[in-house]
Image (cartoon, rainbow, N blue to C red):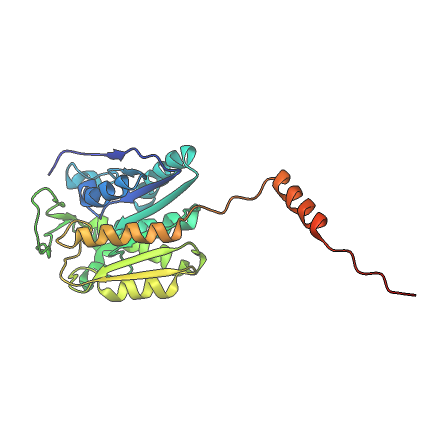
Length: 273
């Protein structure tokens, strides 16, 4: 497993972006995307979530709320110095992004292969068996362009999957409350999370949604072969939905405009008696 890494890329804009990595991955999954957004001037933070980047045992004592408290702290820290914060996440990080949007007021959401359902039906047994079965072999990667630096826990901690199921249950029925713009991106070749998950998220969200369906990538679309395409689509989405707000005119400008209208208004002609 790669050593723990927490990525912070400073920017010049008033908007910051918080990116959350996958279930047992690390911030390296989001690095290419983060660097592309930093080039646009956004401050980008990709925190290492609790229990990741070390060993599977470190996730056994953590629940969904432990993960969320770390994400909320990262969001609140960015919000102190930035007028707007965009939140995005890959896989389980996408599910966390949805939960965060229910507790805070992000400017927009970036959802990459966000999990609202799981392809392997056995995963739904995790909440019932994790105390007895602590580890399960991780499935082979579905990445088209594998990267040895992008390592997840193997064997995987079963409790982590159990907590993800908990998170899915928390957000699914409340998606309509989320009214901010959202980019929903997914690969049709994703072997771990069905594309139907993206369709359901897009249909249930209460705000404007743009869908990006990728062909020729694995589950980790922010790090796989189509990562540049995903990054470009993300930049385009943010340019569209985070356009600077129209500044209100000053009082003096308003008064000047009113005076001009008064001086140019013609008096009605007097009628002959």
